[in-house]
Amino acid sequence: MSIKFRLGIMMFLEYAIWGAWAPILTDYLQNTLHFSGLQYGFIMSILPIAMIIAPLIGGQLADRWFASERVIALLQIVGGAILLLGAAVQSYSAMVWIMLVYCIIYAPTLALTNSIAFMNLKNSEKDFGKIRVWGTIGWIAAGWSLVGWRSLAKTVPAFAIRGDLLFLAGIFSVIMGILSFTLPHTPPKKEGTKPWAFLEALKMLKDKDFLIFTVISFIVATELQFYYVLTAPFLTSPKIGVAGASVSGVMTIAQVAEIFVMALLLPKFLPKNGIKKTMILGVLAWPLRYIIFVIGGPAWLVIASLSLHGFCYVFFFTAAFIYVDMIAPADIRASAQSLIAVVILGIGSFLGSNFAGWIRDLFTSGETTNYRNVFLVPAILTFLCAVLFVVLFKEKTAVAAPQA
Image 1 (spheres, one colour):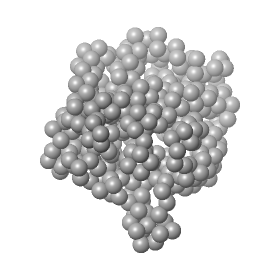
Image 2 (cartoon, helix red, strand yellow; image 1 turned 180 degrees about the horizontal axis):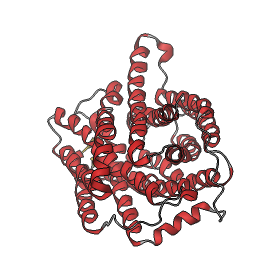
Image 3 (tube, helix red, strand yellow; image 1 turned 90 degrees about the vertical axis):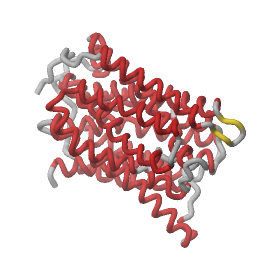
């Protein structure tokens, strides 16, 4: 098998795991386990907490001591076993502990899969999007697999598992753990002269332009959580009326659009127009999507607006990871990816998840949520982010020239 094929399978499974549970976990926690907005907002912030802690370990291990593919394999096998156990959990406290342990194990693999792809691609600016798109396909496959599972459960009771979304994610995780041993061998870099790679990556923040890039990425990341935390409950609310059994399939509209943008638009637009113009288009798509959510109808327009996620995510966050790879020294690239993952998927997502849950409860009376007011908050904040990015970010200054 070619290197690109194996990297594509890696991305497919990495995001199939995440896509099996993340898009609809809040719907499951709210409508099946009856948790409050603050409770499921906190549970959704556990992965971001793990992204703050665990990638420091994962990046260090891969940059200095162990081959990246072996680190990924071990973490995914153990994480899969925890997810299979978590499918039976029903209490809030038990769910918090299960998700905390699992997310600390899973979090390092997000940065490490990016790193192993960058290290094994000859032209990451051109080829990374084509590899990463298989992650999006995996996310879609997971959503529709869950729809099929739940349809089958209606006629075959043995498949009717309360925590089916976590069970499915656990299966994907174990499969990825086994297949990770076949990934391209990616040993730690030997040329690094200083032992703590993550500390070296932190020094990149001394550069003014990179610091601005990081801060704006952080702000945008906080508002992404309004989409991840509240879209599923919003779609299944009486106003929109999507059935709970099919919501995971409906939400894959976002990933279908993501495939189009990542596979066809990003490889052509980014080399020609650069990071800044690419990310500006990405950040402008955010307030547009949230404004449509604020309008709240007709239902077809709300559902169609999910496709804006392709521009929101790919043109901003995927481009951000590519930018970091372009400017980070070779011997700390895994840790540089971990650094930006901590900022975007960690601190920003942690604060954003809890903020989204709090805003949802603030505008909820009884069992009725005023989603118009809820989504007005990220609509305003993402528009301000777009203005800040246009005015402050300067792409031309590189922190460090990449080394071969």
